[in-house]
Image 1 (cartoon, one colour):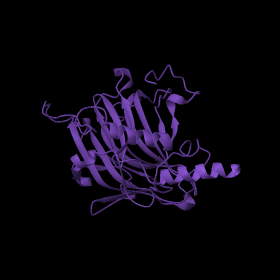
Image 2: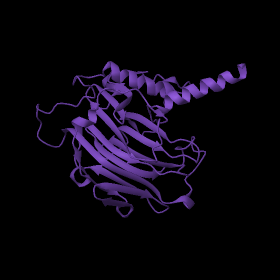
Image 3: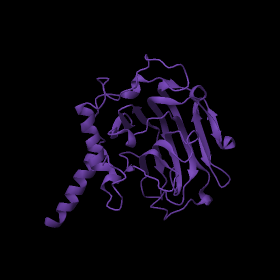
Image 4: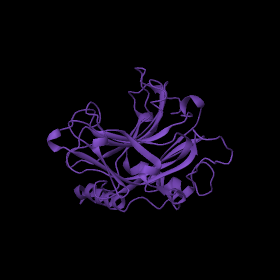
Amino acid sequence: MAPLLPLIFFLMFSSNSAQGPPSPGYNPSSKISTVGFDQGFRNLWGLEHQNLDQGALTIWLDSSSGSGFKSLHPYRSGYFGAAVKLQPGYTAGVITSFYLSNNEEHPGNHDEIDIEFLGTTPGKPYTLQTNVYVRGSGDGNIIGREKKFHLWFDPTQDFHNYAIVWNPTEIIFLVDDVPIRRYQRKSDATFPLRPMWAYGSIWDASTWATEDGKYKADYSYQPFVGRYNNFKLGGCTADGPTTTSCQPPSASPSGATGLSQQQYSAMEWVQRNYLVYDYCRDPKRDHTQTPEC
């Protein structure tokens, strides 16, 4: 019977994982109204690789171009979300993304908060990469703060909701209202504080996206398609009149910072079962550059 024990434990783990995370007990997305694409965003590049149909946006990458979009307004804080459906099959080298950035305002020294789906090869799962840049990108010494996850579902089969909550004390990444990562403001030097816009894009990142660049984009499989709907933008804009009435968003049912115990339990489940890379645990990284670890 001894040789069967590893199989039994594997089946028990697989069964547990297949059930999905425990309920977080609260849905931050329910507090934010859906906006039409044209109400909140505009095309940024690759207009001919973008199609809007009854509120659903499709963008695609082929050998001639990818495509991207950008929010109409910059924000000082907010809830930023979209439902995304990814392309199945061979998508190595391709990144489909939804993120915050001020790279156009501060080229070479910008802030960024990323949700990126790293393309893959058949039979291997997509990787969801979360990342935070703080005034340190583009100067030849890029300091990323990557945490990578696999997902407890197939993101190519249906739309799922992905969101970033960014307020003056923390950043929380959510998947279908389940928090998967919390990044706290431990110092001004390690936290993005300048206004940012929300973006989405699909592009070729063959040099690094899939298994550190081992597999490249193969345009015999083009077009590579990303589908978006259920856009949510709720927060404090930075280009309107300054007002104290705008309250930064919270991911917690209490309206305060942090998460409820039930939300923490759900996040811990995800990190225990699906976290596949943590920059703070990477022995090859220079952790003097990431003191928050």
